[in-house]
Image (tube, rainbow, N blue to C red; front, side, top):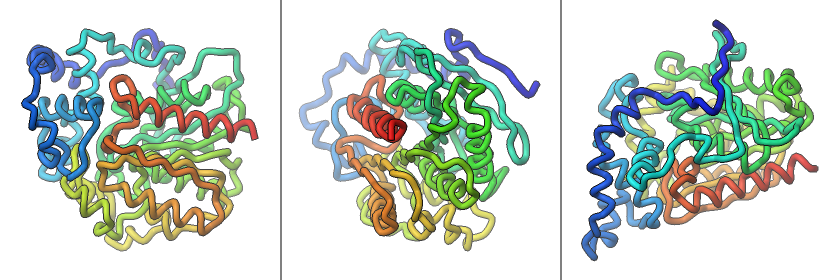
Length: 373
């Protein structure tokens, strides 16, 4: 079937994470009752992989993720890497250890979702449509998940997309684009643009306002959001009102930036993982210079305002600085916020990390302002 729906009060749960969580929940429940030694919090390098210290909320996620015993992805095949525990799994473990309801509708109240497919350039694309409570028509945000263009999907990144729908009071269309190495560059970018064009043409069918569109994404998806804004501008497609780029990959040609140095062994994302992603993604090394990947050297003039959100403990932190500088040089309005004490992947952890809630609120506020302009 080319179209299917999933009522939000019956959220789809992946078998793999639930099985893994069932195994570790008992151990984690006990672990949270144990008081760490007084000097444990000072062992920053061991706990975050960097000289930076994670705040209490973020550290609880890192500890839970470590307890899930994932393997370094750079030593795995793409298929094996996709089966490794994620930050989302860690959040679920923290919540379960506290006896909290982990259903999506309990974690983000006032947002419902359905799963369906839309046409893509090579095949149909699975999407999840999040809709906030209210009458509508609502603005529409096309959202792209992270995972280095190789791993993860809309399920793993449900927390960020769902939270953004609530914060922006907008429909969010989260897209499962094709992934490498099965579909190398530029497949994901082609899918991202196709999804945006579909949203522009079909917003009304979602109870959306086709005049109020925006783009958002995390990590690799942050790159796709900016690249799609450029492609839409160049193609004369309805322009997005705003772009939210959350710890975006802004270039892959220079892996000696300050954050690649100070966060080379950061958790949960490190430099080796990014090199592994890029190796799987590119058909040839020269693709690194393609402006769809190398955003800092792309034609950025004419883009709408951009919100960049970065985490301190992240090898991609400097990419945010580079992208901000390039956007300002192109006279594009930019708001850039760095959150200290948190890591890559923090945006979707709002159920347990307070700074993730702040970041979602910031993104939602900037989107609301753009939709009113």
